[in-house]
Length: 309
Image (cartoon, one colour):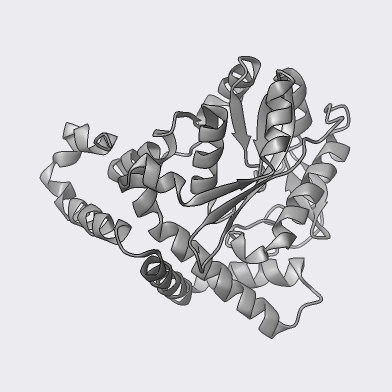
């Protein structure tokens, strides 16, 4: 195993980061714990994070009430708790992704539906992977990068250089390239045209400027209708995938679906509606795997009141 890239960055050895290096040392120890212990620790961490963040609790409550109106309050509360536990477990598993060997990491995932990816590659097309913000997204992206021999994915830098260095390391150590929102879509299109895999995560609310309103769990959601255009201009096939963490075994199951046909981008609303339906279907398979803490419905059609406090 080669040294993690952050260890080579002299700027990160400034004394102001020594406390964070102690945290990395703790993470290194956690990375070697038995899976059962890590899953228990992660579940506890997730519960504490939810308990201590009232604002996040309220966002999750609103999202679940909107998306599962036929569930009673107890069922939605149970889902909020299990989702928090999965998020904590995936967070703890960043220690594995950052600090263990590639061989050890690859033992933590299983890919299902590989034949769908192979069919796209055999046809000489680039796979444009589409998914939502599942808790195991980092591990899933790593698995897809290994399966494709490289790829391009999104990354939003923070104002914390130390954390950025580790997140970038975790997301690039298997050969993935990162693009920021400020760079626009050109790096993604360039990668697709060259035959590289790319990742598109379109479930956030980006306002009204370039969005259309399309149903998501029966609620109108501001949605960027870019998927069809990306597939057409990038000469790519749209391949849905979803990452599912098994809290008992600690295995990440990567579910690859068959490529979506006729996604040409001619009708923005139809494309957005179809994309949201695809994302919703994947999330419904195991809602506990989804990050419900985003303000999914923040932007409202004209005349509608806001959803969040």
